[in-house]
Length: 119
Image (cartoon, rainbow, N blue to C red; front, side):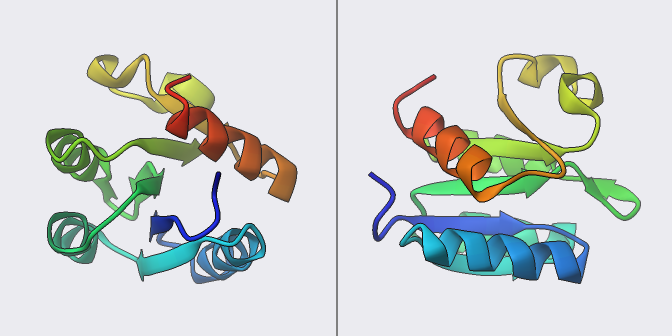
């Protein structure tokens, strides 16, 4: 289900972004990005063909909610990656999928599969 899927990575921590890229590639995904900040994330989210996205909520002083809004408008599924769980979400995203940091390859695979199946 994940093989060949184009996944946008939005993560401001380079080490975490590299680890996430490695995991996605192990799952057979094509990584788009990573975007390390809000400006580049918005550009990639609006300009690239995407199947899904993994969004770190906190991007330095910014949040990735504008990226989530853009993806939602394009009908691109996404999940938030956060150490705060659902408590870090704005109310309008209360039903969004959240991948708890730190996460494993299995947790990432399960979360992405859930996003694609609408869970």
